[in-house]
Amino acid sequence: MFQIKICGITRTADALAACEAGADAIGLNFYDRSSRYVARDVARSIAREIGNRVLKVGVFVNATHDEIAVACDEVGLDAVQLHGDERPQLVRMLAPRPVIKAFRLGPEGLAPIGRWFDDCLHAGAAPRMVLLDAYQPGEYGGTGQTADWRIAGTFGRTPGMPPWALAGGLTPANVSLAISEARPGAVDTAGGVEISPGIKDPRKIFEFVAAARAGFTAPAAP
Image (cartoon, rainbow, N blue to C red):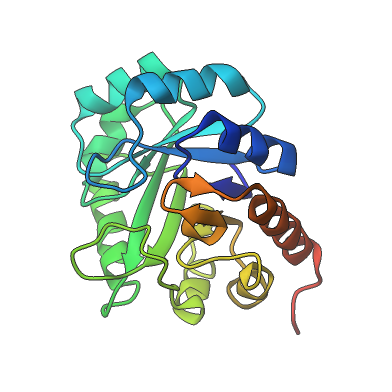
């Protein structure tokens, strides 16, 4: 779906910077308790301005099917990212919209993800991509905490799983190393390229994209 995503976009200027830097996707956060929340009318304006230059991903936390569907239609979203405690049945209901399911790597490691995918078998649905984020009690992401790259990397070696993206505390300074150690198919950042929550630094966006591209093209460690 994407290789490099700049999430938590709240301004047209920041979306355009992500496009110019060569990112593949931007994230528009519709969770109203997030410091990076963006209202639908603002998101629609951003989406209209950038057109089809990058993938436009709507980020939702425990929203209903109808709420997500309305946002997709009004804004013109290309994909849905479920970043809460959603069940596989919602993935099935959202079809044929592409769905990215985010998980936080907590004390149980990958076990909850395995159980979720077991439920997928019964629901007859599966996401197009998985995003692995850092865990912090009471938070649904965007904390700036770094995920456990070692544990995350084992997900990619699990048979039958979809492509996956690494998130959590990624910055221009560490993203190349994270790619080298975890070998994700994609990376996602929000706070790592910001001046303040929701306000991006164009220079950091360019540096992050360049560092990520370098990480993805570097030979895998033996």
